[in-house]
Length: 426
Ligand SMILES: Nc1ncnc2c1ncn2[C@@H]1O[C@H](COP(=O)(O)OP(=O)(O)OP(=O)(O)O)[C@@H](O)[C@H]1O
Ligand SMILES: [Mg+2]
Image 1 (cartoon, rainbow, N blue to C red):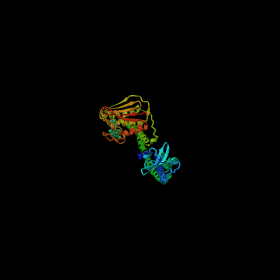
Image 2 (cartoon, rainbow, N blue to C red; image 1 turned 180 degrees about the vertical axis):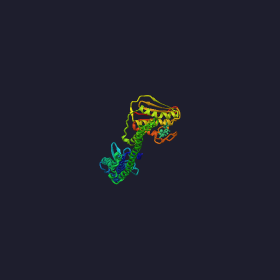
Image 3 (cartoon, protein in one colour; image 1 turned 135 degrees about the vertical axis):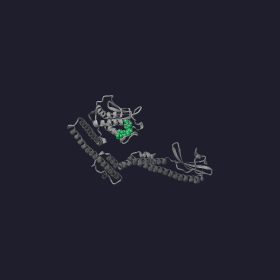
Image 4 (cartoon, rainbow, N blue to C red; image 1 turned 90 degrees about the vertical axis):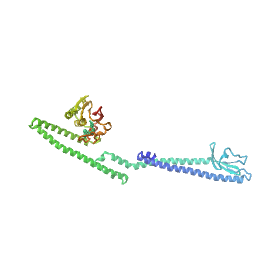
C-alpha cells in the first residue's frame, strides 16, 4: 500500500519521503536502543549496589545486634524485625530488583528471601530519575531534530537532483523545439541518465521535424501541381465560352467551368485545413448564407434523388442571417446529402433549414445506436457500406465542424432512417 501511495507522488516528493522515512527508522531504532541500554545499566548497577548493602545488613549488622547502617535515602524492612515491618504490598513483589512508584515518589526496591523471612531495601531514586528524564528528553530532541534535518536535506537534494529533469521536461514541452533550427538538447546536459534522455528526445524530435517538413512540402506540392492544371481547364473554358459555339456546347462548357472553379476552391480550402496547426486554429470566415449554400446543393442533388425515385424536399423552419465559409459549409452539406441518397432505397430525404443550423433526414437503413459515434472515425464504414466509399465522408464533416466551431450529431428516426443535425453557432 505504501509502495502504491509512493508511486503516485511526484518524483521530488518521493525522494523527500524516502529520506525522511529512512531517518525516522534509523534514528528511532537508535533512540529506543539508548533508552533500553540506559534502563538495563540502571537495573544492573542498582542491583549490585543494593545487593552489597543487603549483604552488609544481613551478615554484619543484624548478627551483631546493630541497627542496619544505611544512608538517608535507603530504608530497611523485614518480616523478621517487628520495629520495621514489611509495608503493604511488598509481600507480593518478586525477589530481586524492582521499581516502585508510590504517591509520585519513585523507589528502587531490592527483595531477598532468606530462611522463610523476607528482607527488603528501599532506595529513593528521584535524583537518578531526574537525570534519566533529562537524558530521555535529549534523545527525543535528537530524534525529532534528525527527522527534521533529513526532511530539509531531502528537499534540497530532491530539488538539485530533479532540476535538470524539470528543465528538460520544460524544453521538450516548448513548441519552439519543433523549429527546424532549434539547437540539440543533449549538448546542454551532462553525460548521465538525463543527458541520454535528452539525446533520445533529440532523435525523436528530429524524426518529427522531418515528418512535418515532408508533410509541409507535400501539401505545397499538391497545391502547386493541382492548381496549374485547374487553371488550364478554367482558361480553356473561358476561351470556349467566348468563342462561337452552338448553345448546347456552350452550356456544357459553362458546367465544366463551374465544376473546375468549385474544385479550385475545394483544393484551396483543404490545403488550408491540412496546414493549419491545432494551436492556431482560427475558423475561416465567409460570405455565403445558409439558404444560398442550401440552394446550390439542392440544384446538385435533386436530379439524382429524383432519378432514384426519392421524394426530396427543402424546408425552411427559421430564418438565418449569418454568413459562413462557402466551401466548408457546402462540403458538410453535400457529404450528408450524398450519404442520405446513398443509404436510402425508398421514401424521402429532407433538408431542413433552421436558425443557426440544418438537419438532413432520410428514411433509409439508419445506423444502429451503438455504432453512430464510430461512423465519424476515418475509414470506418457501416455494415451497409456499399459502392466505392472509403469511410471518409463523415470524418471530414466532423473535422470541418471541429475547425469551424460547429457541431454535428446523428440520431435514429422512427420507424427507419437517420437524422444528421449540424449546429453552426458555437
Ligand atoms: N444517412 C445514412 N444512413 C445510413 N447509414 C449511414 C448514413 N450516413 C452514413 N452512414 C453509415 O456511416 C458510414 C460512414 O459514412 P461515411 O460517409 O464516413 O463513409 P462512406 O459513405 O461509407 O464512404 P465515403 O468516404 O465515400 O463517404 C457509412 O459506411 C454508412 O454505413
Ligand atoms: Mg459518405
